[in-house]
Image 1 (cartoon, one colour):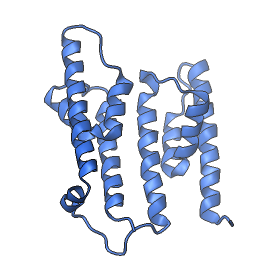
Image 2 (cartoon, rainbow, N blue to C red):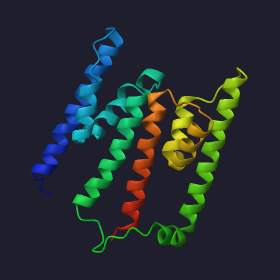
Image 3 (cartoon, rainbow, N blue to C red):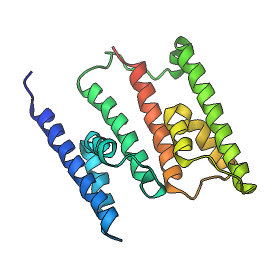
Length: 194
């Protein structure tokens, strides 16, 4: 298989993403203010999210509050870029449709899954809010964001603003809407695949 310019670009930008992540990790580990998160974001948006995810999985699997925003951002951008890559490679149907209602009626299992995961996510945010009020053990941030990422972004978004919970944390105020955008892109692609 012969690689074209686009494929070479993707290989190079993902190697750059991996390297920038490693440099950023070293700066986080050894300096107080030397991080290059903005550069990491730019490289991710330019197509290097797969390299960044590879670096995370190989070198830095531990999640904590300081790296949560960048991780949710890179994960959502990665999924969106995969969908865009599939679109560029002409995997869309000849006729584009926006009839979400018909799509969900035809795919009852997916509809059922999305309803359940959103109810579970909404309940998890509600339980975490109650635990915060009562000063009890809380639900982990990675669990709440994971539920949102797994399809519960609408439930997370509704719970955040209905209960006024997690609305001051950027990894929720940016991360949850970004996962919602990611879910819309995925559903649009599934509706319009060949």
